[in-house]
Amino acid sequence: MAPKSFSFPGIFPALLASSLALLLLPTPIIAVHDYHDALRKSILFFEGQRSGKLPPDQRVKWRRDSALRDGSTAGVDLTGGYYDAGDNVKFGFPMAFTTTLLAWSIIDFGRNMGPELKNAVKAVKWSTDYLLKATAKPGVVYVQVGDAYSDHS
Image (cartoon, rainbow, N blue to C red):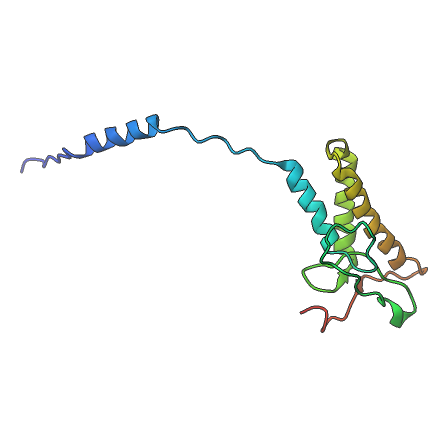
């Protein structure tokens, strides 16, 4: 039995037309990324997560003071810091880690941050002020602040 021969008479012109179309179409321009805007929005995100008495220069205008009695049941002032995970609980270890990375990025890249440098430094200070409160009592570290049921839902 003789081998069968396959013929695709329409495929070559279609392949040629597709190749020519791809070659002749305008080449897409490489996207330009605005890293300054990304940095601005990243730092602004921190301001949106602030807890406590907000400063007059708060840029996220829809946010208001919150959790002004944090720590009162233990007789300590645990206001301030940042909320975590989209709820109203403050977790000390993730906050400390995030603050460390933000501070480290300021040390390494602060000279490239332009006007956002002052906002980044304020973000670190907001967190460290709280972390100092959470460790002010000798032998005690407050690692979670909030009601695990009503604030974490």
